[in-house]
Image (tube, rainbow, N blue to C red; front, top):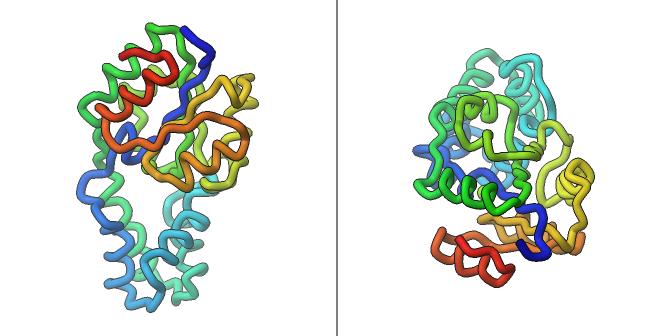
Amino acid sequence: MGEIKLIIFDLWKTLAYKKNNKNHKSIREMIDKTGTSISVDKLVKIFEESVQTKKWKNEWGAYENMCKNMKLECSEKNINVLMSARKKVERNPKNYIHTISMLKKLKNLGYKIGIVSNSSMFAIENMKKNKLFKYIDYPVFSFEVGAIKPDVKLYKATLKRAGAKPGKTIMIGDNLKNDVLSPRKLGMNAIHYKNYRQLKKDFRKFGINL
Ligand SMILES: [Mg+2]
């Protein structure tokens, strides 16, 4: 093992994916069914801030909050529309085919492994039984930290929890701004994830051979 001690992954579209959620399908459904004039990009932000930055007593409260932040009438119908659009895509998350064997290999090589993810508590509840978490030493989620990537707070929280130095850490994720540029601000190494072949190649630059 070289200088690297801690390897952190983004979760969505890096280790796992939500089936049937191409091009923000759930957000588009929310727009169609509520008739709001908010754009997709803006609504993604509203969703993240409203639902993914807090521990909620229940889903209803979370989506009622989103409804308020959309300046919609918070009727039962509107709240249900938001909640069910999201539930449909979060119900059945899948790991990529290489995920478990890669994590196993990294653990066997002696690395500590973290996750830093923008996620609601509901999406993570659906992941509870996922084998992936057996290999994660430091799972860090936006709903626990109260911040959304690219906010460096999430990375600071992870480094603190792991007692790791930024220079001995690599962050890997599919989103350039959130997963690469943000951790680099703290002096962390970062790999922009595109596919497993490319990731293995980039790992080699750090002396990690999978
Ligand atoms: Mg991602």
